Image 1 (cartoon, rainbow, N blue to C red):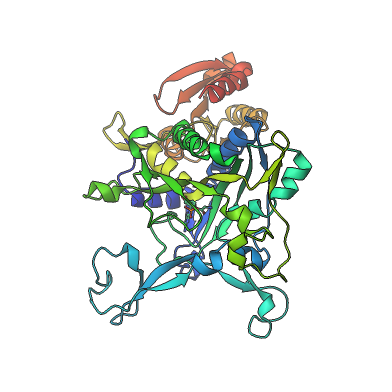
Image 2: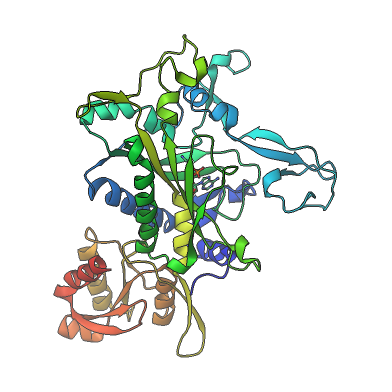
Length: 459
Ligand code: GAP
């Protein structure tokens, strides 16, 4: 089973420390969220998995980390200044604002009024100013927070190409924060104004682009399942001409069933990631070339030529780009929803188990003394925890009955609990309990690290 709705995950997150409403003590800040002690670990584990899979396990992808604030011209020539907008309408009755393309009927979802303004484009980029002047006094001070990490990769294409001596096909990967002044953020961490992306731009020969796009769609379809997400909650969706971004000729989204509670099956799904064929749009747009953008480039706007010289054919051309672009936050939400399971215990009480892949679990093992007022047991449990730290994330907990302690660890997805009891003092063994089966086995304390590591790696 998986979570019946996002609200279940909101409650679990707040109760246990995955995600908290941001600025809560001041009444919050619409749709901003802070990742707590467990959420940050889960997010890091997802990001590490993505990075390892793409950058370390393959030999054709480099990683970078570009800055969030870039020269304004990046956004001018990428097309974002002109076209990165959503159609917005205002309700004249209650003054609320809505995305016109998301309204089911032409009426205000807040008050029901049909008195709406005509849709007008609203640019989603966050504006800021660089330095001590204001944008009004000095228009050159205007800057944007990046709305996608991708452009930081395109503007570094030559840097990476020249310093790594790569040949096509090769990719550049990046993980980082992006910002969009969304008209209607919401649904917990699904749509926020500050979020994190995992993007990879894969540079290819133009004729190979359709085939390689399909390969990346298949690879990511599998990657989500390798993260523990069930295939029945995933769907591929071909974007229509009207939906595609200005730079893409084909985009396939991988959707997740984020809204299983909705009656209309079509409305249960929403975007987890997009995989696009961006053609040579971006590299050309940033290049100083006569054919570029029908002469739109200003001579004063200096740049380089981001073309590629093929040593086999002696031809120079602009590579096509295949872009798998995923959100960290939406992946984390999908992983949590899919791992959420309820089970009855022996007393018939409902128990929550978060069946996270052990690799993603924030905490790998909890050490629990069965008698907290027996010094030797506490000492042994503390020593076991200390020995495990460094090899895996381990915690010690003696703040409740053993039933409560197990329940707490099950709810946050800890794959193993280790209990230390009176017998442990005699036979130097401990009991290891499995989160998913609740089965218990006795393991010699000396063997514990190996025992756990083997099972964590195998998962
Ligand atoms: N460079 C291409 C690009 O940015 P996108 O489909 O706009 O494509 C990629 O974004 C992914 O980033 C989305 O599939 C989603 O997972 C995540 N994302 C986009 N906007 C988001 C938002 N406002 N809140 C949370 N995640 C978002």
